[in-house]
Length: 168
Image 1 (cartoon, rainbow, N blue to C red):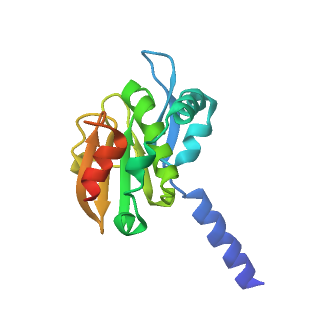
Image 2 (cartoon, rainbow, N blue to C red):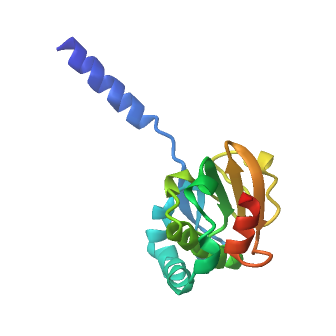
């Protein structure tokens, strides 16, 4: 009985001290919702973001010829950090398209880390200064935990071609 009480106490303590990793806040200038902090793709299911996310995701058609190069060998050890703003027009356009590209090549989105920043490019839930973010979105590609390239704001050619160049 004492063990049960101890277990329940530990669980309650853990839950009560769980830290928030992100939340929706109101942008005082635009009076629109924005998400700040850490999140995953479920953030885009919120009605504040689902309309623009879904529209861009649905309309984008990755180049089938280029994505043939994304073999499992080339994608091995790859992780991606996306720093974006739900308030930013470039983020609203490029991130859903990039996620569709990743889905097309069957990339495991568990290897995608999403960081949402405010208009000052600050994440109130963690220091992102080491990432040296100047513009959003910034898509940082890692292989075996070493940065191998970035796509900043928009691709130079296309998302597929830029990513293929990084993965060479």
